[in-house]
Length: 393
Image (cartoon, rainbow, N blue to C red; front, side):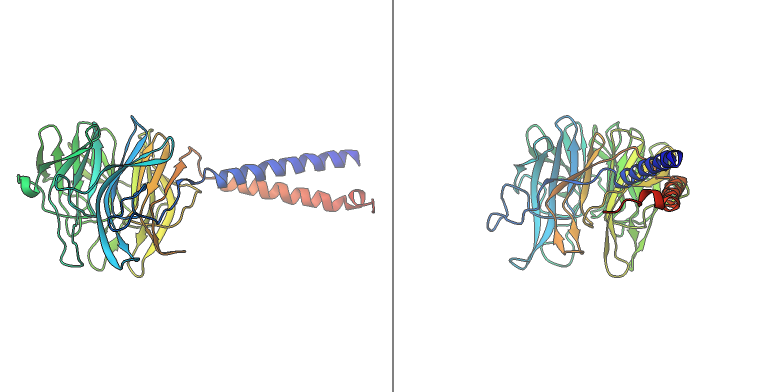
């Protein structure tokens, strides 16, 4: 009987270890709220201690100061029953979770807008395009490219709008990323399928005229390694057709459609956000929506290994949202803003973070071994029930 008892104990320990390991792998890292949702703003102009709720803004991360910057955007002011376009710029310090407003709306800055895009290069934020319509229709699109100096906290119009120059057509909902050499790559937008490159050193735009490419696409998201841009998702047409594709762009080769590895992958979507981790072989995609019928937002997070082209879903789930932003500092992503439809309709201004781990999907064999160990433990317990339950209270 002692041998049976020892064997039962060993099987029980193995079962517990396997189950605990499986649970830990399933749970993984979870989202952490760094700055809570705040609906209270100063009267009239919404200038308070935190940025107003918003969506379709833009965001960048400065790794030298561990700071996230957000700028412009839109929300519908249900309290006063009016649409509200924003033109403010804020800095979020990751270390202590504090906000600081670094620029207010002024004549020497980009007008209020949403659907624009921005990137960070050498301590300057470059912002292009957007829609500044103060009503419902028609759209008021911008073709200006602006820079925001992170030392002087001042905006400068570089080209387009009142500055003129050879620039892309005005647009919104385009994708944009910057290469290591300071060349900004911008593609698409609402009813747009062209690709333009802006050289930050010369201050000039040039259109990419190579064959092929994603074509007309809006609501996509782009990130860049040193020499390549990766664009995910997006939509085209009315009614919209959504994509789950990954496209790659280099100055030498132009656009190429990547064939991702077999296995689970994000559903087709638009208005999601993406970021590149400190390890530049890992692209993170989070949230987005499918509005081919009624809008369904997503709260999932995926990692694409750019070497193997394998997608891996993270276990962490956050409230579904679209038109939000994520930025990356080291191996942690930070999300701000966006709009949700369920479980509650709302605009966001909270900040949450998620550490992206190197964990791989749990192999089905691991779950099978865990189940076998549990069943064996139960079987042995049943076989020797007379011994274990012979004592009565």
